[in-house]
Image 1 (cartoon, rainbow, N blue to C red):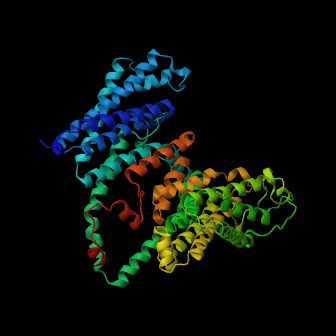
Image 2: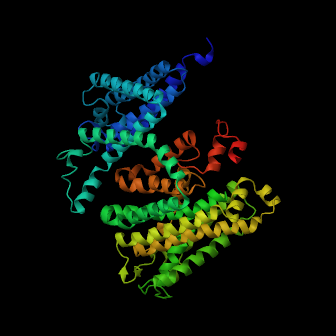
Image 3: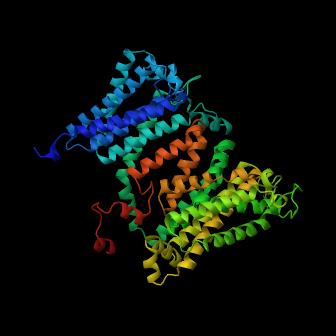
Amino acid sequence: MSTQNRFNWQKAIQLGGIAGLIGVLIALVGMVESFDHRDIVAGAISMGWTMLLLTVLVAAYFSASHQPSKSFSLVASGITGFIFSLVMSLLAFLIENLDLRQILVNASPNLLKILTLENGIPNGLISLIVISTIFGILGGALYILPAKIRKAISLGLGMVAFLGLMEDIIQVTIASTGSGNSAIGWMFGRGTQSGLSIIGAIVVFGVVIGGNLLWGTNAPKINAQVSKMPPNRQRSLRILGYGLILLVVLYLPVVLGLYLTEVVNVTGLFILMGLGLNIVVGFAGLLDLGYVAFYAIGAYTVGVLTSLSGQLSTAFEWNFWWALPVSIFICVMAGVVLGIPVLNMRGDYLAIVTLGFGEIIRILALSDFLKPHIGGSQGIVNIPPPDFLGVLLNKPQTLYYLIVAGCILALFVSQRLRDSRLGRSWKAMREDEDVAQAMGINLVATKLLAFATGAAFSGLSGTILAVKLGTIYPHSFALLISINVLSLIIVGGMGSIPGVFIGGLLLAGMPELLREFAEYRLLIYGALLVVMMQVRPEGFWPEETHKREFHEDAPDVTPVQEAA
């Protein structure tokens, strides 16, 4: 028998061991115990167990993908789940028989109860082995299903998990609108129970699967009918679609309420910065780790020009709308100043220099030298909120429109620049600077325009932050903000404008919604980036150029077909 048709038992055992080590890590950092009180499905499965079972499911899925036949895939995925359960059982055995808390604080009796389903050893371990093996086989079954059904099931499971996590926020939001929750009360747990009810989980799962399958079946027909329409009819449909989106955007704060609107505002500020950094890193290929400097410059400029505190030596007390263009102009000049020393630098050297620039700005903000002018470590207070047509933008529901306007402006500029001559020059420079220069592209002007444009968007986000908070401090502009913005671009897709929004929702919006993850945010960031680089290095919504680069070996269309 050829090696291609043999059962790959090594990969099944290897992935089971890796999944087990990941499960041990999740348990020993405290995530399983911390999240065990939150149910995804009330009385059935907790958030802590969901994380462990999801690890089994993913590992078993990849184990099945390395097998030559469907029957081998199911066997391999079951072995992967079994190996995972053995590693977790060993952890439970060690917790019971050794005092691991001297070294590992989270190896507690509560963790032992969770792993053994409160049945103790050995009965609880037998249940753990059976459940893990079953979920391993389910991961293999998910792999061998047709792609459409696999996608529908994955979306259904994801929606059940999402609604189970968001249960508290959803019920509070519905109650705040005055409509009450009697209409959907059956979807969630009763009394002190959290998460979806069993009936609610089944209904959500079924509706999502059915809707996805129906859409996948009918979408090609709908697209074909639309493509046959006259151009004026197609234009009318596009206008109607944009109008509906605009109506939803305008009415969204009324539906979301105070807390969710604040989450949208925080996410919007990160998206606004991401659109700027996407031009620098995604379009032009210039790795900028000091991007937070422009964020700080924009915030401090507006703070100095509008503050009413009287603590600064120079009190301009301007109106926000007068200070806004000045702030953006200063950020653009700062981008040019940063760009001039790094014109001949690439890659790691460029990243180090820009990192130093960001730290210089932070230290200057803390220094006593500039304290009379920008407040030093005490920051700037009493920054007045802006007003627009007599409406004071001092609440999340009103500031929302200012942030949305900034994001729309940045989105429009990014889209126009992406396909312009300058945008093509950025992309050529990103691929190879020497070739781009040989083709007649002015690298000096192209690089400076990239830094200046990205700095303008970051400064705009900083100005909004200043009036949103009313106070700004140097510690609000740490290096971690640059890392977060760069991470959301990588996760969404380098150079992809829709990818910025996806990355912002995942890395900025979700942690704000799931406050339980706050302690583990950096761990989740790192794990997500590692998984992204291994599984989907081009990002969740990649740019077409990057997608082709990462899938050169895939049987895609030929250049002749693409040109045709």
